[in-house]
Image (cartoon, rainbow, N blue to C red):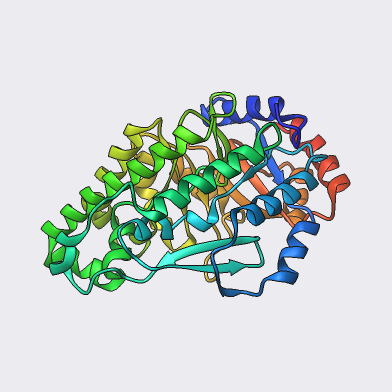
Length: 360
């Protein structure tokens, strides 16, 4: 199926069971091992702003990174991520100035825009233009990735910037929150624009990027059946559940229904949303991220899972803690563990032998 993942068929079969909620007694794991490609990126880039990189250079990075992982028999699916387009593309298509930033820890070059509008009086000047130069760059880069990946690795979906996420790009976070009460009608109009923009962008993605065995490659959940989008509820991490119900749920459910569902990530400061987010119609899986000042999701997973029910989860785990959990038979089932700081491929594959036979 993929040259850089000889056991891809087995991995996809297992992940299909996980995301169809038929593997609650099993565990799955991806293994982060040392990478020469990442070390080379770190030698070239410091943390901070940089220029838009040549797509060929980014393709070469992903090819090196994913080829190194070909001997791993974990539950990862090798896939390049269009990080250069993951946020700035949306604001750029509406006329924003796209800025890029290098992230040496991940090998990403991400993008963002400064707020486009001085205030809501400028909103009517915004237009969705599929002929915009940034849409052309998006198409060209996506096609370049697909061509380079053919037969070797996949191309991951990338994040939606819809609902309040797009309004952040229009007027900034503070004014977005104030507008929920002071300018609710403008917020509703912006949410409509955001929906149209995101559908346009994501439909083009699925037009260019072929599904892998009927599913979507994902930087969030590795692989998942259907045309699946990657949603963000980040703005609601700073609000009550009531605000999420009023402003967040309907736009998310609407766009997930347009596709075959979606996945979402929750930061440490957004765990109060676990009272609501798992009930989103069309949600297929959740990635519980870790943040400074909050318990590691791995350490309190049983408590979190009591709130998320049968929802398939992805969590990060240090190799030592994960290995200890394996030996003590204390790991929660129905979970994909992203195991970090694994010493090497041999240690990863030995660990996976235990993962395969583990049952809750």
